Length: 466
Ligand SMILES: *Cc1c(COP(=O)(O)O)cnc(C)c1O
Image (cartoon, rainbow, N blue to C red; front, side):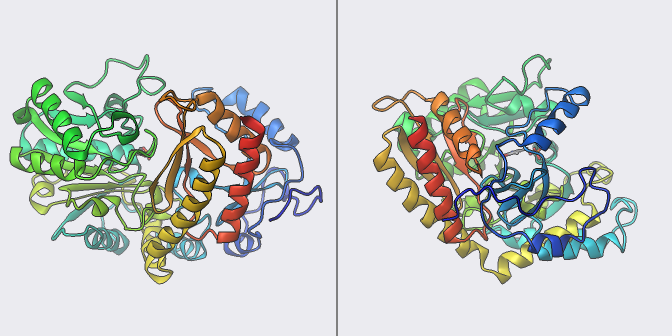
């Protein structure tokens, strides 16, 4: 594997970044290798961090204040010339890799044609193409229709809005450990008050939080956990007051929690029996990451509404609300939309993402990457007893870090391992309401060799931290 060297190579262009680079050529020129030329963060990054402190509030926090100059596929090049392996992808956004050539080409072509008319003024084809792709992507669904917005939180807001319109009910049910965004409604829907809702009240009304399925901690079968969730909601909310149940099939920020078998089908059945709209928030788990376009497919559930964002447009902002025609059609003309929703450049990029998934069989690649990572992480688990569990699906994986022999999270160890990996040029991210895990969201084009390097760095990081 590539060792960190001190060879000063590939210094970035002028610090102020005056000239717009010819992106595809530059991206392709970045070798898929880890290479450090300074400490992390380097001097240029530290300088920028000082400038930033004067003009950006601390509420906008950066996990690793390494300033990025450019990136391609799995490698981020910082302003000091360090080549860092990105195992986060901007939290599952650059799912098919940074500056994917096809995405860059499609977005560039669209930039030169038209960048904005407002779909609700004068429409354009790429929006319709994305809606067609999404309709085809939900296994078992027919005739689903799509509204496009800009962000995951907007997707959640609109999913709730559409479900309320359809049912005429106010209640929104969510699960413990959930994360749905940082707008006023979604910050109420999150499990964690801090940092997302604390001090920003009043919070939204009619949001009900129910226990989830968390097999490592609750030891319940899917049927038992579902019975608990349902009993809780019937008691605290009342089924007939619920417009929707919003569920991440695999909880993302919550810790990559995979529910026990049968949990989601039982919830979906209860929703169906009670006229509650079942909304799958696939913002993090979706877009091919788990080995199917949407992860819910692997749980055998056909959701009424699917929310997508993060990975949908290869790094450009776009979000989809895709649902049953009878539900989606209930909103009056003008009731749905927004100035930038379904921007043509983002839509062109999203079409390229769908085409890349098909062309390069990225569903199978997600499975390959998942298998390679799982084997390596399981080997590390045998070596480091703090790794309580290796879990996930496809290329959405996490390890949970507990104090050995207990169910007590070891957030300090998580932080030390992530820091030690960053010092060695691997960008990792924690996960979980108690910071009890480390998540892996690699590019679906990451090679086995690069994965092996990530795993060897992780091994070193654990050895240096336990
Ligand atoms: C990130 C995320 C959101 C919010 O998306 P934004 O684009 O940050 O608004 C919503 N739901 C889930 C599951 C997410 O992971």
